[in-house]
Image (tube, rainbow, N blue to C red; front, side, top):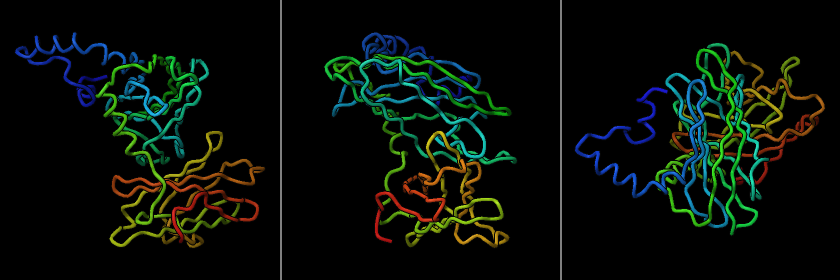
Length: 305
């Protein structure tokens, strides 16, 4: 990993000489907090990954995250990789005193390599974790096996085993807390009345291909060209990426089109999560699509349409 990338995420490794003594003194004084809030780095081709934690138990849970730092030109993937790529997969089975673990994904960016379009993270990302202990008075031994895709000119499957102990009386790690909070601010939230929303979904056949047309309702002052849409399905399934309707797509009946190719033929009800990003604000909507009848049900509608 090059030095410039690391500096974007942490303080310079070598402070100016006049400040060196003070920096070393601070390192001695505050080392327990810094060490407790991070695991060791696990390196892979194109970057490194580790666990970070805000520190103590709060409101019955630990606030933690999986932190990726990527070399220039490399990227990893969102929960649905898109038309190519490997999304992150986490196995918590080796953890101790862990009752529940929830992995969250900040919204990604669209990446077109000329052959396929993917949903990616570049440079680096923190994936927030909400962890609830089985016995709150005892530490959690967090052990995860992480598998993910990492790409530059070629895609390289990568894996890492990461571990750290989370103690209810741990001191706060303010650096990790800020990094996790910034990432969680980019996790899509349920749409509200002032947000752009998908107002209509229409399932159709285009020859032998199954497609979903999406129509949007946007608030005044919002430009449709400034909105990006990402689609997610359960991890054992995959769909493509929503694309803006083009004039030559004469059968399309919406503003965006999502190809559903590759789904199992016997899957009747498709759970679908759509993420809309306008500026740096991301919202989500959840639907169930009946592929037999074409009926669409929105789960917990954000507002009356």
